Image (cartoon, rainbow, N blue to C red):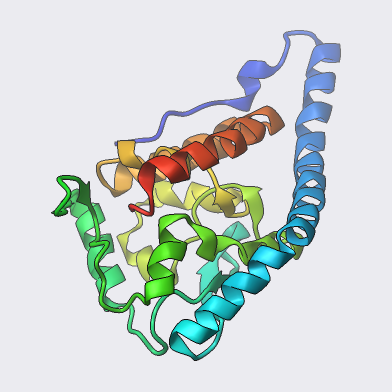
Length: 235
């Protein structure tokens, strides 16, 4: 499935003056997006400081080991960066099950769960700690990524942060998702239940990149909490 192509040129007027104005607006939007990222991530970190502290304590008391999980991801233009999450698995857990889940995504094969729903990976992973299950259910493990946003490695809204071992699965057009910083949330993240395979997941990311606007970002941020409540940690 090829992603829907959304051309920025369609928004330009036919006059030279209109074209110049639209081009200026297009150039300004990334700067405004970055400003919004800095302001909202900084305010969120301040407002959520007590919650972040409580989660850190719960992770440490539950399973010992480091509170924060660090993993290399691919961001803007495919550059590597270290993503931050609250640790939800026992220390030194391997990533084999996630690689297997990615292969199922490519093939569009979902696993039947006991409650009658389906997922590309099991929610009952033995590697996940008790506190980790709760954090994953409500996506609280992602909160340290606000620091990634503040540092400019991520955005509040953007494509899903990619893992390097996923690259062999990529088709050429998938690489268009690296044109923007990866996001805490995004079009794929809030519509993941509608994607039946990797092509459809990547199409959401490409569609976001090609149709980006601040208004779209605001809408996706507003859609995120309902999506978290609806999905409850399902991939």
